Length: 310
Image 1 (tube, rainbow, N blue to C red):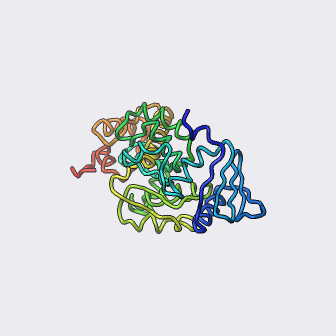
Image 2 (spheres, rainbow, N blue to C red; image 1 turned 30 degrees about the vertical axis):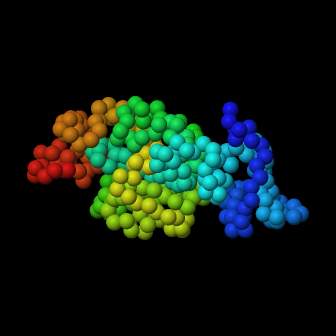
Image 3 (spheres, one colour; image 1 turned 120 degrees about the vertical axis):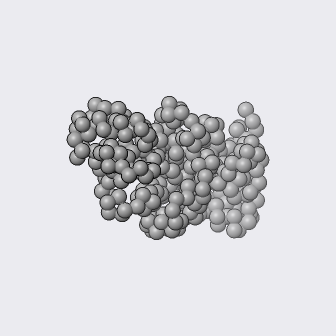
């Protein structure tokens, strides 16, 4: 056990600006404040208490001291890393608090579109690193299904599921996949922000960057929105991709069981073959309940394809 893990008292000097930033952070995290003589403030929550003295000293006490020191106070407020983060920094993993958002199912003819979001502060990033989280495209379906509930249990997550029927309705109204993605990403971000204050959101770029920004509502428009190609390399975005993929897989299986026919992933020749079997068994009208009809795959299933790619 390291020295910091047994730490129950921690004293450090802060500037007036740092005290102000700390108070805002504690307020956002739901700490209870009280008046104490010779202090700027005193605050407590669960097994952690902080006393900010007018002489510039901050006293941190309680069993929660180690995590607070190494997951917030030093890396985020003091910008001075001493405990527990060297290996993360060496691997270029940001410990900045953020929300990561990603989707699954947009390239799959059958099944829903799933958008997931994960919130992680410095301790959450460490958890994801220890779980060896990687983007869903780089791990097996079995690994995604096993990892997703663990991430759910340890971090704040939110999911928006756009089932095939609703997807087709939205596409008919919006006429554009990127607009549906922007709508779904915005809903996930807003849902997380309604429960956890956070200043930064990271997601993969699709279409014009303004799409997601314009789809956000009051809470979402105050965040820093980082949209980059290859955002799944960020461990928090990767975690969101795992959550989304696992939910897509379970919903796709549910649809397969419901209609008693295998509904494969992707948009391959096997998908076309199963689509034809489905329509022979259930009729063309039932496709809207299991498939994204704007794919050229629909025309191939119906024998109307014009040899264009999906």
